[in-house]
Picture (tube, rainbow, N blue to C red):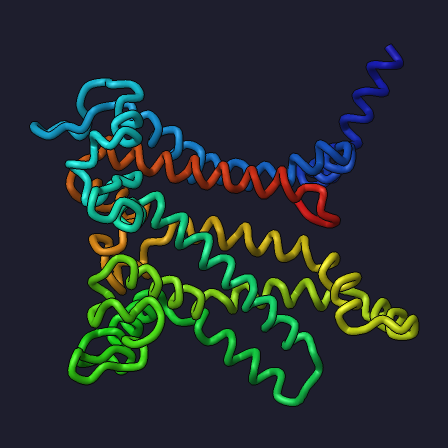
Amino acid sequence: MATEQESGEALRESTRGGPYVAFVRWMESLSETAFAYFLLAPALLLMTVIAIYPLIQTFSYSLFADQLVGAERLGEFVGLQNYVALFTGTRDASLPSSFLPTFTSQFPFVTGIFNSALMVTLIFTIFSVLLETIIGFGQALILDQDFRGRRWVRVAIIIPWAVPIVIQGMIFFLMFQPNIGFLVGTPQDPAFLNQIGPLSISYTPLRNTADSLFLIIIADVWKTTAFMALLILAGLQSIDRSLYDVAKVAGATNWQQFKMITFPLILPTVLVAMLFRTIAAMRVYGIIETMAGCTTVPSLSCLVVSTFNNSLYATSATIAFLTAALIGIVVSVYIVKFADAEGGF
């Protein structure tokens, strides 16, 4: 009887201050793990609504055939046949470009590589992220120094990142238009880019897949390097400056300070920045469409959009799910390989 009275008094005491006080006391009674999950619940719910559920629906759509006639969007259930058709090349006839390299007898390597969406996406991702990381790291090291006019230099670096993708694409499109752009010339009056580097093979680079991909990588590096620089700069400024003072007293050179202090401490930040850029690069679409067009430079996102616009909804869902799966594999590799980095994932 006394126990029931004590329980009733505790309940009345917990609700005496109203629902808000009762809610606060309930949160205070949670363990650290339960409280962490409670804070993550809204984000997990939002992710489920806008990411996980659409991904499941996309996979379910990919298990049906394309409906070429009639009012229905999808045809009969075919299981994994759409995936088999993409990987074997039997679906290439209905695609604007192949999913995997289809090697020809004339140019067995180059043509097959640059005409396939998967390889174009991987080439763009590898080179753009690598160049952005190297250049962004250099910019961050410079901006981390104390010199006159540093604020203006930061503004100058950030400006390309603030330019919308459509405007950026049109700028580079006009720069490399024959007889208009100042970076390419004509056979009678060649510009310097026609005589050196990969553009020496074409006076119309945006009509050539290899040249267009090269220019798109340069355009993406020009715009997105600032993103890498800002993330890496934030990591550099979190390093305890007293470590450098101790290193100088010990007689360490600048290279030794970078090797023993800067690089190990900044590595987790660099890996996180590379992860973000890799995910974004593998979904590249806007800069390709505005500069050269998806028919010239195919990518996985280009294939998704073009097949959807052509009412090939099941094929579009298949490519979209494969793109998401590829991104998931890349993220998993980052997490598994670099999880032991201090302060990392």
